[in-house]
Image (cartoon, rainbow, N blue to C red; front, side, top):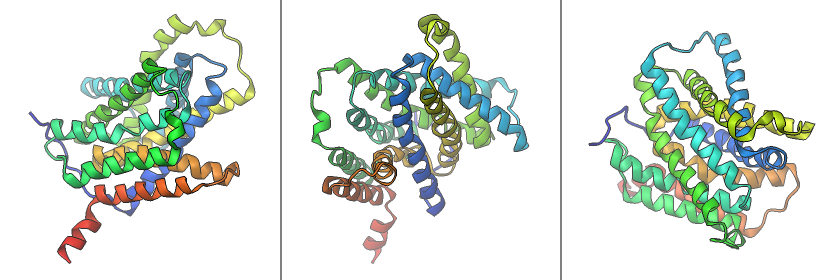
Length: 308
């Protein structure tokens, strides 16, 4: 039976701005991870990511006049959200990146909106699949593939387990976006939800990382690795999840999932602006397709044309 939760609404200019900011923060996570994975094992990276993010948010929370709730049902939801949105996908993606090129990992991750549309259609009463929405998701995925380039598929299938791991992470993100809708009905603010989620994630990951990685036996990483971990925790996790839950609260899970289309765009544009990398025709063509996809999923422009 479909889950009835707070209905989503169309994206406004504020929500689109937040979605773009979130894509920039998460786009940087692939860069930070690529540095950290050369020096540390996956579980340790993920634990440091959510652990440092939890410390940051727990410090900031009282400054905002907020505190963590004590209700057991809310904490059960925090642990459920942490498992679906942090523990499972972070571990799978970081491990997958030890064997996969970042381009292929980004394409597999960009299937998240497709899984979200399907899951939301089955599990919710308000976010049903429409022709425009499904077409927009497929067009957006094609845009991501075009922008990254067909070379990303070189060797596809040669690391099948790693590819399936990143794909499973995308599916986990989809279910997390739907699961997270309940925090609004519980009366939990986005800042509090973000803090509770990463805190629960750190508590779940700590014993596993200690047993598997034995971090005390690892070499102390250098300054660049610590800088990458801090960026991963502060920007791509702590700040990113505050924006994540704000967007989820106001616009719903399907609209939130669009961020995975924008992440490759953000990464490529940042590369051009910061690193001086050259933008090619395929980048502009891919961005155009992604823009068309967002218009189709948003639907307002198409409805205005139909009325005209």
